[in-house]
Image 1 (cartoon, rainbow, N blue to C red):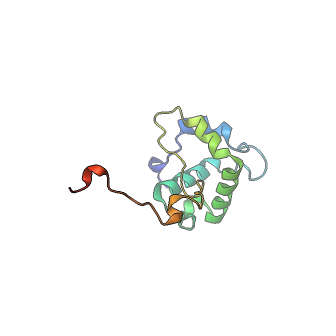
Image 2 (cartoon, rainbow, N blue to C red):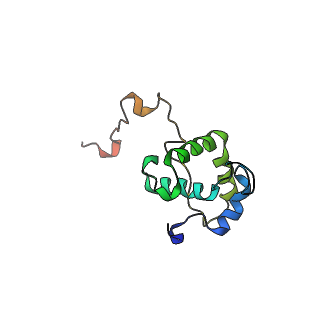
Image 3 (cartoon, helix red, strand yellow):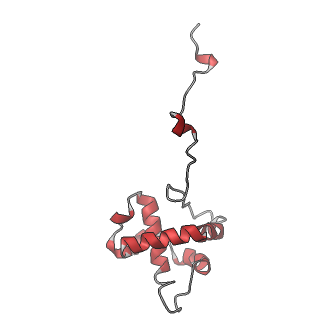
Amino acid sequence: MSDQRMVVTDRVWQRLEGHVPGKALDAGATAKDNRLFLEAVFWRVRTGLPWRDLPREFGNWNSQFRRFRRWAESGIFEGLFDAMRDDPDFEYALIDGTIVQVDQKSAAANGGLRLRPSGARTVG
């Protein structure tokens, strides 16, 4: 994978590293490849493709998906967003269907959006 395509630059990683679980020197897999994992998440957000299509360079897609769910459920992504929200160069926001849920009673569930012509458009 080309370093030119990476989103998590050294500068960004320095700001995020303290907000992710574990440390690189800890025993176990908690912190294994956290930076590469974030690259996988950004790849998924950029492409909109399913986790199953994750390039092999990022590791096993199912392992990355399961880690994503754990981080989402434990609020880690909110912490990362808070750490980066004041950076004008960081243009990625992790908002997609895996995080945002729509209530079933929303307008779309009741037959969709109904547009009504404005009074200015009525022919008289």
